[in-house]
Image (cartoon, rainbow, N blue to C red):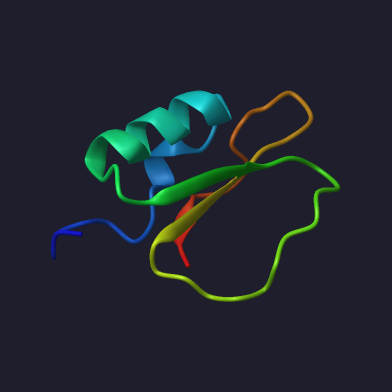
Length: 68
């Protein structure tokens, strides 16, 4: 991952999660990018190679995706 790689993507809030995932992977294809739907369980471990995209019931990004 490049040193100028963002740790957060606030500009992706409000777009479809699948589109957000594509944009993040276009910047860094080595990242593990997952979409988290309402009610899904996630682990609490912190990983700098992972991005979680939290979406609403319609698949729209709710908050800025971040590394960790």
